[in-house]
Amino acid sequence: MPSRIAMLIKARSRFAILLLASFLSACGNDIEKTRIFEPHTLPESTIHNAHIRRSEKGSLQLLMEAPLVCQYSKPEPKTEYPKGIKMRFFNGYNKPTGTLTARYAVSYDKRQETILRDSVVIVDLQNGDTVYLQDLIWNQLQHRVYSDKPLRSKNGARITLGDRFDSDDEFREPHIIHQRGTLEWKEE
Image (cartoon, rainbow, N blue to C red):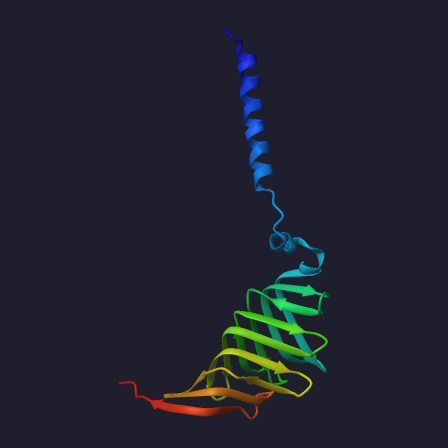
C-alpha cells in the first residue's frame, strides 16, 4: 500500500501536468489576439474619474467629467473617452448655459477634431432646447459642429426630425438640415 506522501506527490504531479498541458494548448499564433498587447495599442496614460475645469480670465467656461480618459501618441496622437463624457458650459459669469453628453468620445490632437458617438445629447439650458444625435463632430479649425446622421430636436412640446445637424462651435446658430417633420403635442 503506497504511503500517504507518495499519493499526494502523484496527485500534485498529475495536477501540474494537466495545468501545463492546458497552458500549452491555450498558446497559439493568432496575431490579431496578440496585437492587443503591443505597446502602440496601449494608452500612454489613463485617468479614472476625471474632472476638468476650463476658465478664461478667472471665469468658469467648462466643466468636463469622464469616468475614464486614455491618451495615446501612436499611431496618431489622441485622447479617448471610452466610457463617455459629460460637459457643462458656462457663460463667463459662472452661470450654466448648456450640457453635452455622449457615451463615447475621441479627440484627435493633430487634426483638431473631436468625435462624439452613441447617444449624444445637447441641452441648451437658456431656452430648454434639446438635440439628440447618433454622433457629433467638432472641427476646431473651422469652429464648426456637425452630424451627417439623423437627429431629433425637442423644443417644449415640439419635436423636429432631421437628416443632418450643423452649427458654429458655440451653438449660436444651430441648423437642422432636411427636416422630415415636426410633431406637436399638448399635455393634459
